[in-house]
Length: 117
Image 1: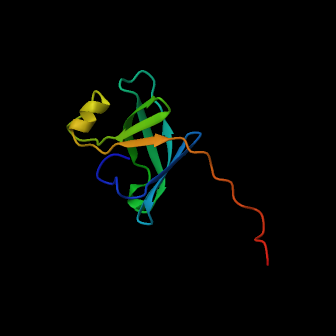
Image 2: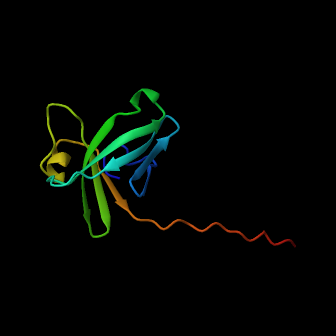
């Protein structure tokens, strides 16, 4: 991740059209998302289905994204007057949080019992 939370542990899991974001017990989101066609830059719209702050359920969080060289770059954008950035570089110049994600294979759990002496 690049940005203000770079020192913290963030987990983002994407499966089908579901996205789970988890920073800590007070800041997590379960969402479903759509990818509107014909947008430049490419956009993602995540609808919050569950989260720590129940007042946010139902909100739509827009983001711009790019997939390149095995990396998904995702930049959530606000609904303010600034509008949608025209590029990831413009989003960076505006100081927007940017997540750079690589696919990680799930770790296999060790199903063997510990050896006794």
